[in-house]
Length: 372
Image 1: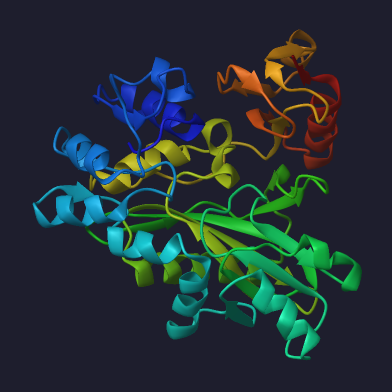
Image 2 (image 1 turned 135 degrees about the vertical axis):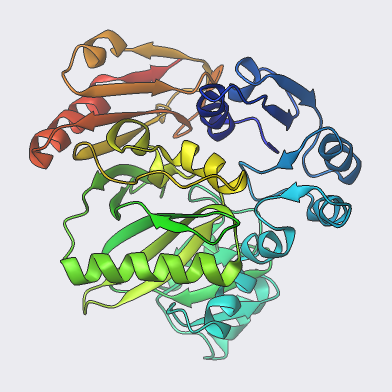
């Protein structure tokens, strides 16, 4: 795995159930995956030599983060190493501008967009009347967890415009933000997990609550799954693809963006589905039969975020009270340092009554204080 964060940790834990040796490349063994992988290699996954030399030691290479050195992956793939997702698909996905052009070329629905060299060009376009408020600006590369995104509603927001090369899209009139995690193996077998509804933290602009089932009309849920299948087939990806979509207020589904790896929108599957997203990713990249994606129980997942006023060594205040709640499954990632709104873990609440599950999830959020 390129990357040693929480996704790598949970992938390694799933792999250990099948006695698979796992390797991770990242800068420090103190990162979450460092304590659970079979072999940890210190290095930079953005560096050609580090990625290439790491790849020469393994049988299958995958990622837990998109922003890796794809030139090394292309060379390794040409030399016969199995690399999933494919470097060609990864090069498209890690550039939000190329992603949007890909959907356009493949007749996959997405919001209208334009591409800009930098923030100054965007400001000039506003001045010239080429761009009108409101719109969303996204850095073409390196954005994640709400970073690299600016919502520009009026002139007062001009100071928030980002400097790098960007993609600008219409501010969609959203009813619900949903996600579908889909998996594919080399045989072409494809399976989707049930769609989830996402609720975002208004300050950090990252997912705070995840609800499954999403409460969608049956036709809309089926269409969302069909779009996810169309997307993974178009990319030709093996393993997972998390497809985030907007459901507009007029009932239209638009692909927002995708991630070719395990994803925050699939964490609940560890506890609530027959097959977790991590097991499914391994099945996909190893060309094994895909597992059942049926739900065992309804669930609400809450991201456990660092307190907005604290940075430093982590302390979990209220953890025992949360662990005493029926149906609450706690997952702490093992990050040594907390920062404002940093993802430090997640909790999945299982209850066939979604209202009760949400009430407990809110109680977990209010009870657990991640401080230093």
